[in-house]
Length: 439
Ligand code: SF4
Image (cartoon, rainbow, N blue to C red; front, side, top):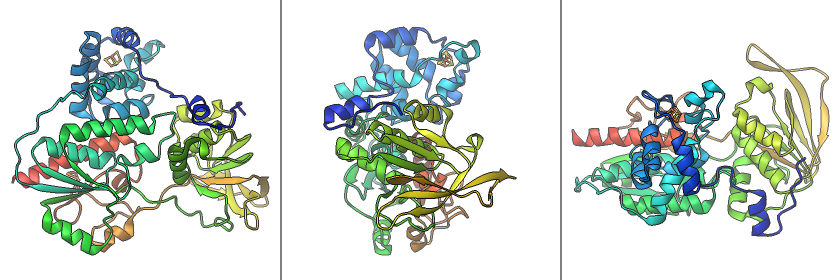
């Protein structure tokens, strides 16, 4: 394992969780932007789900107009700062940069994006003037990336927007579910405060919309309702021992770290179950919190892992051990966890089959399950919204649900995608709402 001292203070925590993509200095931004070839029909733009005009904003940075660069970015993506930090740029814009064909390091688009947007967030520069009020009102449920993106576009076009958020803070999983070495709470909240000042939407925190009556009230008061409700808690594995203490869901664990920092104390040996990006985040965070041994166990092969290669390499770089083709059959212990009984697996025709008589026991002090999140099917059936077979909200190409007035986007529709996809689809939903209410 990589040697991480157990963080005993905020200072120790910050040392172990140093930002992966720190904000560039003016000099760094100038030199990096000068490398861009400003390609015609640039592949980096095509690979950005929000279609930011990347060569244009890089040129604006290079000519000393960071504020114009920020406007170019925010015109397409209201989470310009956060996406510069948390987007998997390695497989999106930077992965598509033409420099990759010449074995030259691609342009650091994400960091340039963060650089430009950071300037206007710090200065508070007003980039937009809002259109005159249309007299129409839209309720947005959930202050995550999809909801905020939808709210900004609607507010810009003169709609009155009320966001209803069950939690105490905005920004959904960008605040609660992303590893702190990708983006800090302060960074997320600064961008949110900037957006709220720019677009002037209302946010009602600690306001859970969960009953039929709540929805009926919104239907009477608002011309349209946008559902950006995300996903629920970590799903159950349905194996014995899952309810023992010291068995945690990865989403809840990552959230605790973001809120409590060094106050989260990890034990000596931890098993993380899963093969997606959340599993990688959880394993990397355990190592940075000073666990001596972290074992990531995935029931399929390396080639079938959902996590991006760079996320996998990152978790390996902090010393986590990765075991493929093993499936947990029981979490052992009487009150607290003592280990996990696994069975070895193989994949045949995309199906996981268990290898008979291959069980073995791996001891541990904690188990973290990164095995997906529950869908909010009950809440949706309450109001008669159709779901897909996968338990996600069914929408058409305009992001309209099966119920009149209701639109939806984000993880509740996709089942779990990147922040940038939620931002892109939240904006598209807003454009459909505008079209509907204008007709
Ligand atoms: Fe610049 Fe690379 Fe995009 Fe070309 S592909 S415009 S070099 S960032």
